[in-house]
Image (cartoon, rainbow, N blue to C red):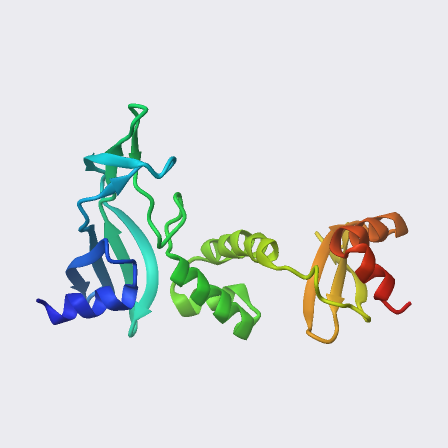
Length: 215
């Protein structure tokens, strides 16, 4: 057993079917590459979750991961492809990133946590040595996902705040509904007139919640 590989496999926590087979470092560029390999003999069709046979492996892909000390860290893997019952060849599902992304979920969490602290996309990108575009894309991907996972249907609301914000040099406006007690933004909608606000309220709250809000 290799302590270093086993240790990093434990830190990655990608599951028992994935293991680190090699660790490569570049001291000039201050980068670390973690080679991950699927070590299971049992594969499944990612669409139907039925058993499938190994067909081959895709070309190596890279995913930006959380830094290891001050070194930029990358996960590198040749994802297995399986022959499915319908005759099509598909890549198996991976648990550390979305299908078409080039960063791990763990790196996205790091970006969001740092954004909460800096309140600045440029500073966050500079600190993590990544592009502003990547930080911005993570915001636009994670925000809808986080909103979708929230469930405020059972929360009683007595006081809310309604505000308007201008964007695109003041030519367009959005209405924001927030909860003063928790400091969280509940929803955002286009426009700032009465009808836009009413539609946003009906979308955000249940009928019971609307009745409990103190006018």
